[in-house]
Image 1 (cartoon, helix red, strand yellow):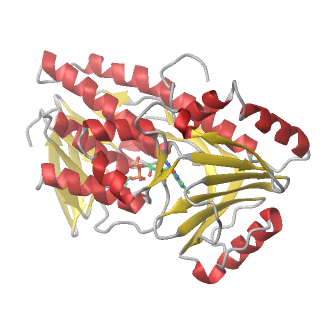
Image 2 (tube, protein in one colour):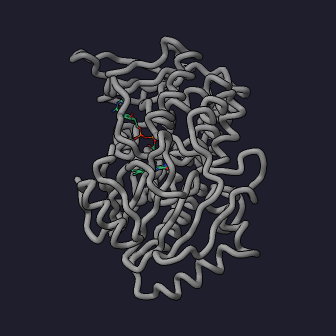
Length: 385
Ligand SMILES: Cc1cc2nc3c(=O)[nH]c(=O)nc-3n(C[C@H](O)[C@H](O)[C@H](O)COP(=O)(O)OP(=O)(O)OC[C@H]3O[C@@H](n4cnc5c(N)ncnc54)[C@H](O)[C@@H]3O)c2cc1C
């Protein structure tokens, strides 16, 4: 490879989007991904308007709009009655909704686009096992089909997720903590009359939330007191019935999983010729659904900074790349605070009547539009919450 080129480690949603953004700026790149197949386990669903605006700039928004569901309203419920709602129609046009798309479908669209733009630049089934920085370049050792190979490039971007090899090999610290909270989730046939609305139940016993999915399904997420790695559909259905009196049919279940939550942030997003984006740079609580969207904002800003620096010199001035870290690290911290706030609203509490009154007030004017802004990832570059 040419030492002006970029190697992206990780072909998840952020690595693929990073590749599309670099291509947009005419910066050659190759993605190295250890998987050979798409992970069918479903994680992220929510795609926020800020990301849809970026997709529009890159000419890929129509694909997303075709395959997803628009959530225009989020209803808040206290377990016995509706206490308010957020109407995303108060958000700036044209994307006055949160788009719901399963992560494997999101990755498929991004991968197809990347391959369309760069047919030979995605190496699958290759694990990065070594990284060395030499004068003027970075060299990666990859293992593919039992054989080791070396690749060199001017810059390496670690988009290799929360356990990032690139971050560890570069000696970049990752600070944060695990929250005591844990959740179980499952996809069931949609037996509710909520249509395309999302519903958040803030019950005495803890959060229950549900989101529409394509094919008449609905995802339910339930807060639990202890971490349960492999919940049964029956357990999820029982907890939903006990807390919010809704019947879901365990026989219609197509996915279950349990997850704990944490927040971590890398000490640096830039170290010499090594850069980090997505979960490799920061992990935020998935309650509120912002981690992947935050990673896309990283990728967009990083590609802009790299393109700007490249305009000055083909060998990117490393000092200037720090602009990326200076801008994106505070944004990641802000998203972490917002995600923690979302999570705190859903805790089990004896102050249930007080919380109901607080949320009711927050969803009325003059706070309603501010809440819509918070839940759609707006105002991240402004001072304050
Ligand atoms: C239950 C749950 C729900 C969520 N819901 C949402 C949501 O609604 N909205 C949202 O924005 N976010 C959500 N998130 C967060 C979101 O899933 C992550 O932020 C997102 O997947 C991060 O993408 P990434 O590409 O940075 O990392 P990953 O998705 O982890 O991808 C990293 C990629 O790198 C590859 N890789 C790793 N190491 C190597 C190596 N050494 N060599 C080669 N390849 C390697 C991996 O195989 C993988 O493909 C949710 C998370 C969870 C757990």
